[in-house]
Length: 230
Image 1: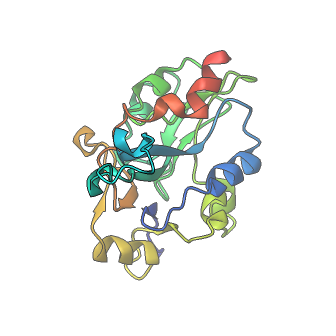
Image 2: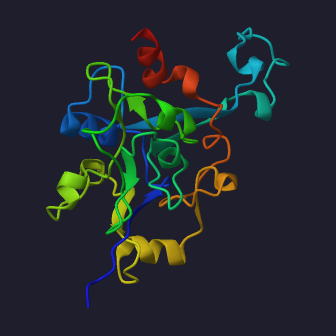
């Protein structure tokens, strides 16, 4: 009997150090044009920076010591690799007028047929994760496809292979012995925009609500700034 396959990914954010290796490896693998990304690392600064921590105090003042809570900034930088979620119910596919957006039946990878896509941007507008982009050279819609050409050859996606901390784990969700399945069964995992009921196949460990907020952090990301110039 043929083994069932459903590709998915777990990203352990406790391990992610924000090195951007996944982002660079993906861009190199697919020769993605400037101003566009198939995967990017969202970065959020979170915490407090007390005003008193920046004030200069006279050295000869015995009463000018800062209180403990105001001496040092308490800041944390959070990272979140953001890519196509390869949903079980991809909303983006339902709006394509020419059937270019589809989901592979044999393994669940959400794809775009380059020979059918007319660049209408309907799927891009419908995607709740903002992961599709219009190629500025061809006008065709593109996105992460789990490096399907590599996966079909028995290789890992470029982003997973390049991760120096093994924060990204890719595998068969239908195989209970796979590492990705074991992580899902043992760890407290979360998905982006669960309320959309798209049933994503990209899972996160230690996902912070602020970094997962789609309205936070984008103003500093290259994807949006560069894309607006095209």
